[in-house]
Length: 324
Image 1 (cartoon, rainbow, N blue to C red):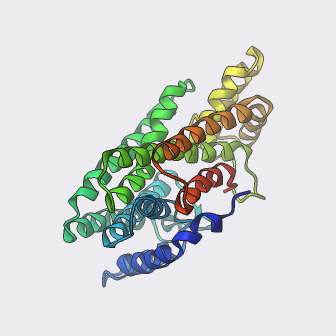
Image 2: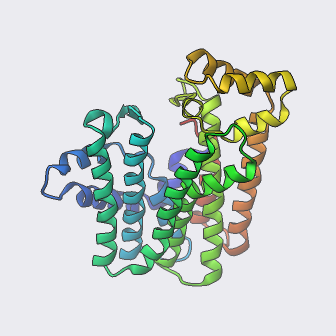
């Protein structure tokens, strides 16, 4: 079992510096929004995206101010999207704490997210690091399109695997890919090095979202992952897509009927059990391992073995193994 410390030990000083910079940046506007931003900053998760910025930089060079700014921009953008997502999803909790929309209200959450998007743009331009925003801006567009496509597709029970992967690339993998891209260009501009880490980032971003979607069916209160959220919201994800392909005709008819009644708690529970009884989990694990191999192939094609590369390898396994 890969541990978090196995990944971050080599960039411990980078993350300590990043946390100080992030907290100082988002909490000191001089306005009432500071209270909200301080609250947001306390519940900061595992920092997967800044970790990727620093590892992608260190594997090819020495971390510098541009690397720190890249990590800061990526995390501010990510945090802004979470504030907006929680409003869209009508979420009450994130990582076990009240969401901003729950603790304050929807307007506060939306405007705080808007402020953070603007703050990221301001930091990039103030530091004249326009090339970073040239990478991040398309990812922001992809995030919005991905969420909109998911909402539109959720109206239909039938979503093809290809549609699903296009959605999760846009809504999740694009920003993770951008984190790797920004990390590399902060220290190295060789095209082959950039392409290597971009492809790595894309693949682990896809794994990250598939794992999230798997936990929606196969997680539990014990793992800290609330199950059934995607079902209630009408999101057709990979476990359901694979289950549909493997179910008998009778079970498929039953599943579609339950899907139309998914606002009912019992219907949600039965949908989960039907998916669990299928080969969906096995097929999702195969898909994640295929993507893992693609990510590792990217690393092996361009990077000689070293401690930073080891951390990038461990991170792939950590994302697959995580339980929340």
